[in-house]
Amino acid sequence: MAPVKVFGSAVFANAARVMACLEEVRVEYEVVEVDYMTKEHKGLKHLARNPFGQIPAFQDGDIMLFESRAISKYVLRKYAKSAQDDLLREGNPEEAAMVDVWTEVEVHHYLPAMAPIFYECVVYPARLGTTPDQKVVDESLEKFKKVLDVYEARLSKSNYLAGDFFSFADLNHFPFTFHIMATPHASVFDMYPHVKAWWERVMERPSLKKISAHMEIKA
Image (cartoon, rainbow, N blue to C red; front, side, top):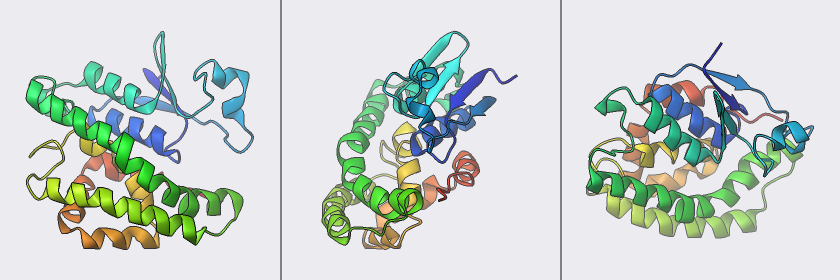
């Protein structure tokens, strides 16, 4: 039996983040499906794992965790087998600080600007059969471009967000960016050559290639 369990499949972007970290540190894990359409995530059984009724939850022996970024950091701290696996760069305070900075930027700036595009163009059409609200998409794209201006400046100076090394700061951007890249709005990245080159480097990671094969959101 796998030593750890992820409750929620890679279809859920936040679960995909956790699985990518598990793949990076080469830990065997079991995926436990949670039926979103029947609201299993709001049932008592799942609420015991995640009291907010969201996906994912994570179990490692007696410990049960929720919040995907916290789970991911736990996985990287506990299971990193070498310095190469140290995606948090905790052996170097300065590098670790930069990882933290760009992890926070994703949460507070990048994802909030991108999320409405993700829901309007990916989730709602698949789950609800709706067409995107173009006004919402257009307004969000303008906000997203302002964020990408900052990323372009940063990535003109280093290959990755925290420096010239791949880290959790980069991996953290993977799940939602992957979905946006499957929409016509992926073309916005063409305006930012350093950001686009960074994304191509990120997606060369075997862990991300493996997880992305299971991320399609279907009706």
